[in-house]
Image 1 (cartoon, rainbow, N blue to C red):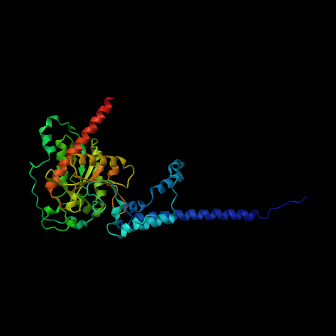
Image 2: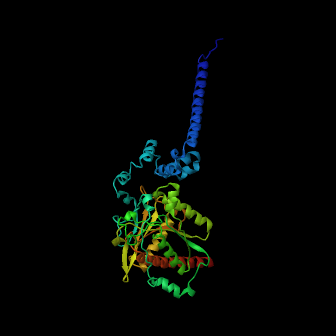
Image 3: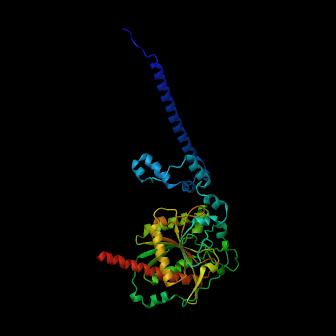
Length: 402
């Protein structure tokens, strides 16, 4: 009886062992590289480490569906949410995009980085006020922080208190009939660019990029707006943090203003559960003929509303902007320059609005407006917003009764 021997079995065994050794070696090498990398990153000088801001900037260039795909590899439930019309981008394309901030399928990402002013077209005009187009949108300036912090002479003549809007006067007259939030502050005002000032009040400054002052600045408009809201029964708090000084303490750049103010907004919401609205008050840099309107013989600084485009679920913010724009147009025709959705390269694109659906950024006037014009606009917005707020409260009360 003959027997068949498989003389190749020892060779197969050796081949299997070799593969196991090779894979084990690769795994061991990867573990060693990982520990060495962690050791280097945690032991080197902080100045040479990757900052969270740098990592955030790199990853922000990656399409969000890529992260959804990667999570789907670990949890199949995420795969159901992956869009059918989306394909996973190539690794080479993603790395190129992270390294250069250029999207191969979007030439604006290249032109916006190379041509001054071209990044403006990343902004979307949702509703254009009178005269508003892509040539006069708000300018996201970023002056050197050392220039912002310089001492400058300023002239500040407070406007005559008798020159208030009819709304403010009526509110004082009918104070007994004005509804009130009581001791609850429901509106929070702050200024990410708190030293933005105005050329008419800076006698020795001609350069709009240098219109900065530590006291005579946009924070006074926030205070005036708060006063107008309080006169209409709406409890309001104003933050007076000197964001520019905070940047200087941390050795941050001017463009990181929103990172600094984000801490202020988060703290405000954490410490006051009654806060329902958060408004970031700015001033624009476009010429006065674009930021001024005459209504009933008086000049007002026009208002532009900005909503960020680079965060999820901004529909509520857009709806609020739409409502306030329409009410401004109805009561003060021409006061609103409209509202825009802004994001993309060269812009923050979030403006802390992801923290609340009732958060907006207001551009009050421009660098050539004066406080008399600005205060009229603050009174007007205070009146219009108050009408909106109490109308909404009445609707909510009626809904609860039903």
